[in-house]
Amino acid sequence: MSDKVLYVMYDDDEVLKNSAKQLVAKGVKISEVFSPFPIHGIDPIIGVKNTRLGIMAFLYGLTGLTLATVGMRFFMIVDWPMNIGGKPNFSYLENMLAFVPITFEFTVMCAAHGMAITYLLRNKTLPGMPAQNPDPRTTDDKFVMEIRLSENHKVTEAELDGMLQEIGYLELDKKEIK
Amino acid sequence: MEFQITKKAKNVAFGLMGFGALLTIIGVALTASDHHFLTRFLASGLISGFFFFALGLGALFFLSLKYATETGWYAAVKRVIEAVAGFLPVGMIVLGVVLLVITLADGAHIYSWMDPEVKAHDEVVRHKAAYLNPIFFWIRTLVYFTTYYLFYRGFRNRSLEEDKVGGTEIHFKNYRRGAHFLIFFAVFSSTSAWDWIMSIDVHWFSTLFGWYTFAGMWCSTMVVLVLTTLYLKTLGYLPNVNDSHIHDLGKWTFATSFLWSYMWFSQFMLIWYANIGEEVVYFQLRIAEFKYLYFGMFIINFAFPMLILMSRDAKRNAGILVFVGLMILTGHWLDVYIMISAGALGANATIGALEIGMALLMAGVFIFVVLRNLTKAPLTPVNHPFLDESNHHEI
Image 1 (spheres, rainbow over the protein chains, first blue to last red):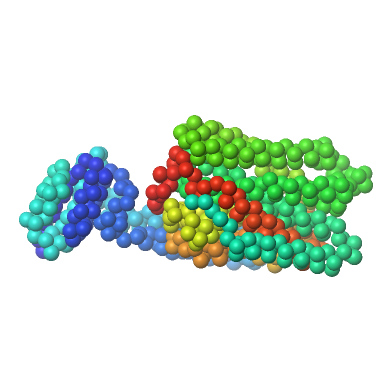
Image 2: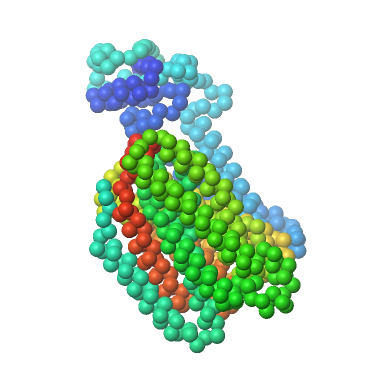
């Protein structure tokens, strides 16, 4: 399905926020904003949902906790009971304290790595993946708003152009996607 | 907006004081014939005296931390922190009186190193006498009290003056004084914990003990700040305090709970692993005699905040915060109880009418003093340089 994308550029985050507000008030859906830094307060304006990364972090942490417990119980108690510091490992529970630091570290490691990899995958920004920002200047000092016509059935392209003329912008770039 | 103590709050505070006093009298009547009576009575006073003093001290520390780091978000709740820190003078008087009576009673088996007879027969105590003797103990105690009081007066006076004159001069003075206080507090928080609490188990020592006590103090203070802020919000005060401020205070509660748990575990695990006779006695007694209380206290203070306060929504929910807060506050009182009572009375320590009565009595005094402090100044600082930032705080 063919689609047309409008890239509206600004040179100030506050200006972008203002025009985004006006556009959203007129029923336009803004699909993405590209910016050199996180813009505070842009999420509720363009309707980005709260991230669910935290839930994933918890699940990864839980995985780490379980793996560490099962692993250490097998290595240190079942397979080869070790006697460290006069504390023979006959039961996991009685030696639990010694395993806590490793369990903690492994939980943190799984949560952190899982979260980072999930984040990169979800954003399609794994190393080597093609860049998605429409203009390299958005990594420097420019801010770009992305509006897709396929997501805006209520307004025509001409109407959208009119609105943008009225609100103002720095540069407007249009792109056909096949 | 000026704060007025409601009749209901006054009734609750005085009710707690009255009920606590009644329970204390019942407790005295029940245990007066016991030959441990004096020790138990004074230990009970020390527990609640120290616990509530520590709430005020924690608030003073938190305030100076905010000054020293030039934090912006807290400006809207600054008066709450000041009001809690304003309990310090009362807390110092109570703690000072308890310590004085203990000293006059030759340690009353709480500070056994104060007892000349123990000193004569106990070689360990004799070796520690250069540091642990009543005169030096009182010099140190007075130095702590004076320092804390002077810094508190300074912060409070400058804060009230800032309301009148504005500008940034007072802000930068607070910034410097905040940093100064942190330097003093870094040393005093450890040494005062050694003096007042660790010296009860006079043969035992742990370098982590000061931080451990401090972490518990900080966590309890954060709970009190959350509860006070929420209470003022429900009455319709503090209009500029939004969900984000509550969220931040909730985060501090969550984080300091972890700090405390981390300290508890570090101290426990190192001693458990090394398994040296002189060190393990501390935990041996507590596990042998108070197994459920000791580990129960740890679970309350660790698992409750961890599991319940982990999500973002929970830290913005007043009901959850109050519930967890009251649990943690009880948990930290139990922590202080086990630190002091188990050391002073050994296996004979129990929680009875005496301990609970004194805690409620002090809680009543604490609530009344904090609320009265809140009435003395506008609830929102007028000219704090970061007030605007704080009013628009959003996370």
